Image (cartoon, rainbow, N blue to C red):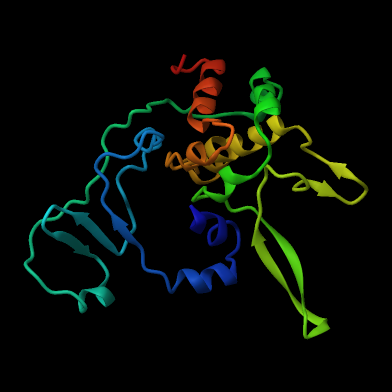
Length: 230
């Protein structure tokens, strides 16, 4: 998902590309998941595009080495391997195939989050697919006339994210920010790249201090749009 945003989104981000070329992905198999997961519904339960897979057994560790650079570092008995994967979650939901902004922009369900969401941004900062950034100018203490401009992770939920010159702010209400995030995770990204941005990991549910459940938000939205989560 990050590759779609930073490498295949009309142009390639050179800073991301430099780091991406040096990364090796290691996946640890998962059989049971957690109470807040809904990865099966999001079709992310079976890992793809990794360099090494690990299954942890009672008395041994099984490895799947798919990268030639890593193979030289391991030896052992070769046997068939299939990465452990969750096949059923406690949470099951249906995501709308297509969501149009005009159908959801003024829904009453967003007003619930005006009251509940405290705009702390924790859901964004634990999300494995949030890509919003801002810039900060850093001045060195040794010489205030020198410094650097850094791109840093940002949250679409926190105050000030949509501030513009002239005092304009496009999403003042917390529910509107929830709508923006929801549309990005299960609507806009899919329209552009063909699959959902949300992986169903459930981290946002676990991190929220107000116990807001993103999976419940998806269920409510699907129900309003005439889906099967009623």
